Image (cartoon, rainbow over all chains, first blue to last red; front, side, top):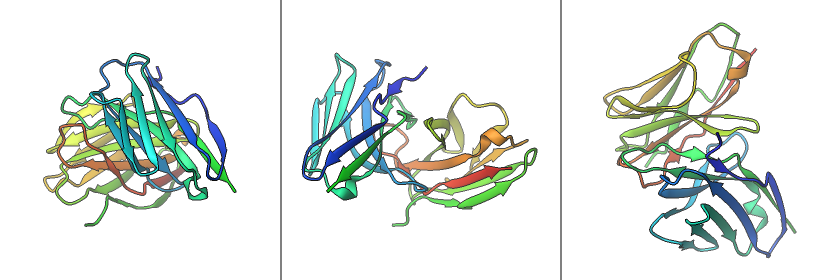
Length: 113
Length: 114
């Protein structure tokens, strides 16, 4: 049972445009959500997170939106840069005394010039 | 501050053997989690340790085990290796162990079972 889903395995965006990566979840106990960026043969790097008490969190070019009623979150990257090309993972946690993360299967973002 | 360190980086083992992977968390972090990444499967949660106690375990067979030491360093062990155990094994540490904070990942150990 995949509790966190990233339905788009890949996304291709032109440099300078907006990249929108989507993530859906099924477990209503999740109250903390994170996005990680990953290059091959490396560990994931934390990008941005959001608590369920918020609906938006912004950090530079990265903004995460949370729609609790739809159990949906999205990551916006504006403007997209070639260095953003990587696999992006959405993760969720039910934070009651645990750091356990449930990950989606990832979306490969390619930003072309 | 040093990041999460995993050793070894690469490992080749034969079916039926056992393997031990090591993880040193960021200094001061008390929570350590392990994940398995295989192609197309994303990152699958293996187990979580806090103060030398296993707090959570993922849906993996009993061949997968782990432990945490008093200095927060952690090891995971896989016995009777199978070809399907070939994967990138990732360790993550978190500062408080109470949830609600980001986890910091090591570079992983690439295990190949032949």
